[in-house]
Image 1 (cartoon, rainbow, N blue to C red):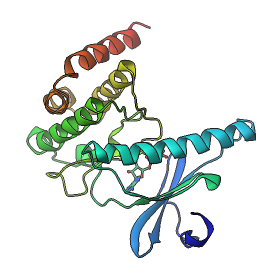
Image 2: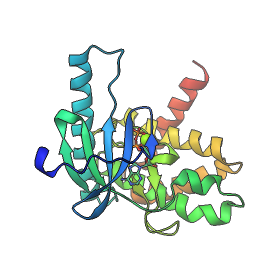
Image 3: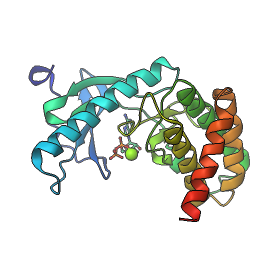
Length: 221
Ligand SMILES: Nc1ncnc2c1ncn2[C@@H]1O[C@H](COP(=O)(O)OP(=O)(O)O)[C@@H](O)[C@H]1O
Ligand SMILES: [Mg+2]
């Protein structure tokens, strides 16, 4: 699984270096791919750090696959290399939700469709018992363009089965993120919720209620 098929050590610089990982564009058996290397954390004892990084890598690979089986687009996992805390993923083209929100002239008209589709996809994930765990607009991509179905990346903090609290936190983060990135964030969140109820018709009410409680708790903490 590891050595022989390892992608060429890319001379490329990481295209993204988040809090947790470095993403590098590589070729995988001729396909455009992203290598995700989970960084070590020096403040954790090494054995604990190794274990956490392995668990998150394994968790992410599992959830990426399971999300697809729920009908939610995610990158295909080409390889898992646990000793190196590394995944090789299909590279998804297309803008992030963040890029759409920040685009100049992006008003409610242009954004309602993509945001509603995002809500529906998250609803489907939740209805299937999964939470995302780090739902910022950089982790939502539109591989078929803004009018197509969205895809989720970065599921390493997700859970399945997810608790009501975990699903509520997902919804709360979306509200915060939309509000911080767009002047019409609240209207967009309402559009998002419409999509969400379509994707999660049974569970929508209780998750929305929990998200409101979380918001209140944070506000009055
Ligand atoms: N498979 C992919 N295809 C295209 N872009 C990706 C892919 N995976 C991640 N990205 C981009 O790189 C960013 C960082 O990757 P992510 O998995 O979120 O790492 P981190 O855990 O460091 O946040 C994402 O927010 C996304 O915009
Ligand atoms: Mg991320």
